[in-house]
Amino acid sequence: MGRRPLDFANSGDQIRFRSKVRAFQYLPNAITLARLLSVPALVWLIAGLNLAPAFWLFVGAGITDALDGALARVAHAQSALGSYLDALADKVMLVGVYCSLGFIGLLGEWLVGLVVVRDVFLVCCATGMTLAGHQTQVIPLLISKVNTLFQILLAAVAIGHHGMGWFSVALVPPLSVIVAVTTVLSGIAYVIAWWPAAWTPRGRRD
Image 1 (cartoon, rainbow, N blue to C red):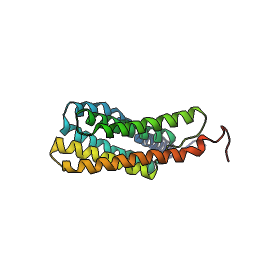
Image 2: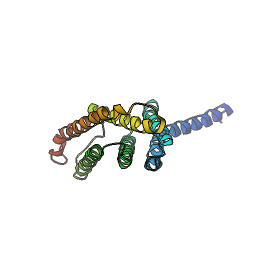
Image 3: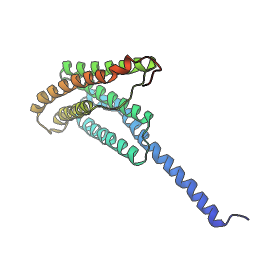
Image 4: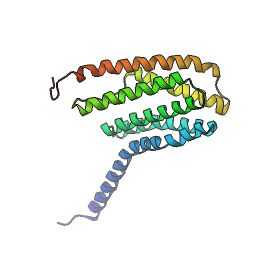
């Protein structure tokens, strides 16, 4: 027996539905990639003292950071690639912003150096462990999330004060101290978390 026209219609609807689902599942990574690609423009705006548009671009990047994670959970599209890409976008954006703010004198060079050194150190450790055959999971620790939050707050206050006339510049010193402390603590926490895996013989699984 031949298939009824309704069956063909349903089959076509299913194909279109599945195509839309696949497209929706790619959306979180596309948003993350867009955030990563916005970093050069953000750095250029800050370095050129165009702080008002830099503030709004920074806020937009922060919104997409929350949005891509929420969409990935809703679409059940969480993946190792998405986790690596999201972490990379966050690191590149914050390092770029902090270097730019240090370059124009809105943040202390000591703090910028601390943030950059920690991130470079962690990237080198993770890369070295991966090349050595050890598994490293890109799962943000609680202290790292706190550190990222205060890094974003400090950058937003510095850019917003000088670019928009918002916030008090008196917030910069205490926020700088909090960022410095949480940066050191998060670096130590990652070393402690990765230490057992680093000394586990390659290929051994308990």
